[in-house]
Image 1 (cartoon, rainbow, N blue to C red):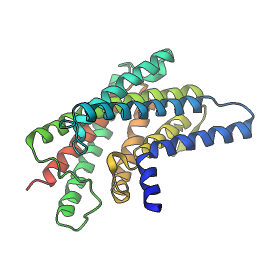
Image 2: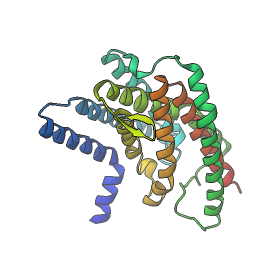
Image 3: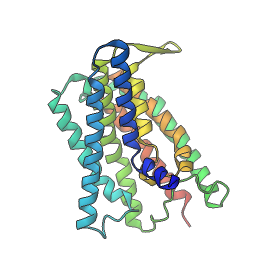
Image 4: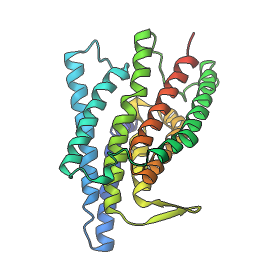
Length: 274
């Protein structure tokens, strides 16, 4: 019974995050006496994203079962991230396409500096470290902590995975989590925390925590695999979140996120080559 309950929580962890946001909403109301309805909007956004993904996966696996089997995540990833992309734009439209959503190319110079001096060095460092770690995992020394990509045996799957990780994942997730969620929070939450001398906004912190928590046990990860991925997700999340706060544009977050996922996929492919 415990195992089945644990599996249920792991496969629906995004709903645990939604329940957490609902609890924050209730506590906020009890303490301040005012209704912070933006928490309810966040819950609605996350719920709509989860339902859209589940419906798309169900339809694709029913109608095209051979092409969209469980293991080959890049094919389902293209479909579900297209859905996330258009869903995010639709919700932004309902909210009035505010400037805070970052759909702009302003501060391009600042974005390029962040990409070159912060994003790409981290990508190189982490993908190199991941390559070494996964090579050790192949020899059994760290087995169980790295994602299982044994299904990626054909050149089509390898090329598809690289194409997917360099394009859709960063684009759709940054549009949702940075543009829509962090941008919407910035319109509704005031205040900041000083990290050294840098004023990190509450909206930046909360949006980052949501992103990190939603990715727990993603793609069927085990507890060990989630632990392995946690440092990467924490660091890359705060890099792109701060980049968005500084520039007000999704340019740097999308490029950094896309390169990060893409080179991590390349590292995994190279590390597991026979």
